[in-house]
Length: 305
Image (tube, rainbow, N blue to C red; front, side):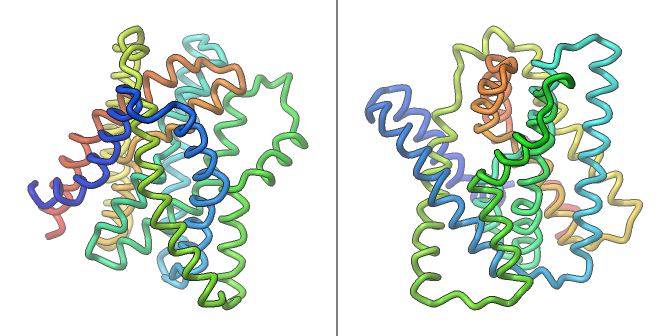
């Protein structure tokens, strides 16, 4: 357990520092708005591009790993829609449930990946995180859009303009086509990448809103338990049915154990979803994940030491 806490501590400390700095007003609110934009449009795309451009995509079992990831996601989405139909859940909340259960905090995931000693686990996790970004963005937008208001062309254009998705596409293209990256530019990308994780985790802390949380305490707690404990358990059980090695199991478990993305709040508000419930769920998951991640990582270490 102590070793797992040491792995998680830098991420937890940065999130906590971001929360304190934002709530105390030590740093002006305008800084955080600018920091989020800088990270979203420049620093984080650079991190995704360099990670994918240099990732090992020739792992023989990567296709099987991705198939498992998307199978579990598909089961989650179908289950949510069945639940929504039985309970006549409004679209504004369906989108919140979907995002809460399949979106992921990439900053936290990559921070954990860089802290791991095992290069195979790190490589698998980086591939999963980057490749899953376009898919979860599409699903999230569709889940928040009423059927009669779906505009495929507009959705497609918004995805193409998304700097995270375009950086992933370019990163994969450079990797697959073996396009070399000039060393000077690679050094610049490295500087951007190291800045992105720190700034991103600080911004995650600013998304924690305890004032909103108290109004949606029960619902956000249930959603968070499903996301942080039930889904990882489901993933673990399903993987026992297939011949995945220890590194693949650990990487997939970490992927499904990290909390939802704080940017889900912005998308939910933009598409007229229940953004207050989304804010409460993001806050609840971020706080609870401190304990659930330590528990799950410790159990994985016990099973695969």
